[in-house]
Image (cartoon, rainbow, N blue to C red; front, side):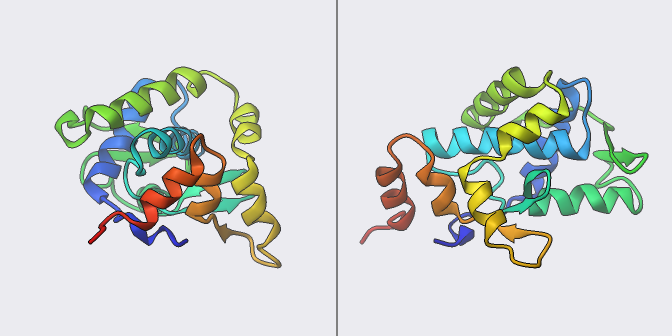
Length: 176
């Protein structure tokens, strides 16, 4: 099942990056990516969607939200993204303003806060270890000679409670 069931929301992604960067002591490319992954898994399980509608790829150090990563890398290579955040020293995410909370739903904030509470203070190795879950391993093992491989939404959903109901919902979001 492709991740095409969700549409990436760039504006929401920018606010998520700022929100995470403002709420943890070590906002890096790695920590923002991992905290969003943990929040997205919770949001998918409870509410049937990812927060920003991103697509995850298995990379060496865990799942990476591909469009959020592109936004972060855009700032590494040039000016701040929409005057919202920048990346210093090739890895440190610096919020240049407060997040616009109206862009995020209550459920988005709930899952982001839960992820930050659980993983915002843990070392990088722990975030990496915990993100190397079954969905990541499946994609990583199928990558062949590539450095990355898309993580199937179905594989992420299968790890969650009530996975069959969730997968049915994802396959039938717009019933007749």
